[in-house]
Length: 225
Ligand code: CA
Image (cartoon, protein in one colour):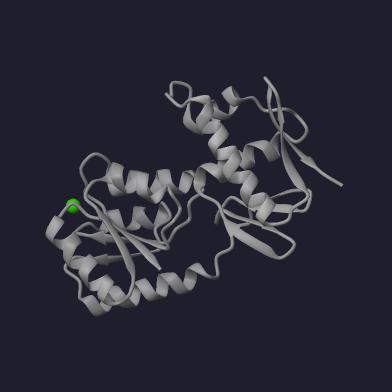
């Protein structure tokens, strides 16, 4: 189980990290909202401990952005005394729980266990199908014939785009615009790298789906007989 701590009080973040490591969680800690979002978007975490007042990006904005991108990692808010309205809006924005600072270690550990237990029950209904392959953009799982593996966020976004285009060819420019935005510095070979990652994963699943390269044009999904 991997937990991300987003907390700008460095001493508190370090103390939390130590406690969690002692309880056999893997832990990363960052101290501002933007780094928190960048890390959380990787989709590798099982849980986020999120402070609300943070430099660069506040916890609420981080949470809203994360949910907007289809990342449903459980989030426990760490709220300071008197932030009652923040608690309520936090739950509106898709937080799973909150603990008020100062909190006891036992209380926090219990909340973490409860959030992780609930996580197992939440299956977002956003599975996309192509041929014998199924992509769940909620939990980033790609499955085929009972086998499944996890994609990273960009792989899932790219595959989602290809699936949504059906038999239409998708150009590298379209992929870059959709995944990184118009004014990004991303180059064509970044797209090629992600395509090759996805191809490896599809082939690992023994799926009959292939990503065909149409030279000079782009990519298209096809089912092979
Ligand atoms: Ca803070």
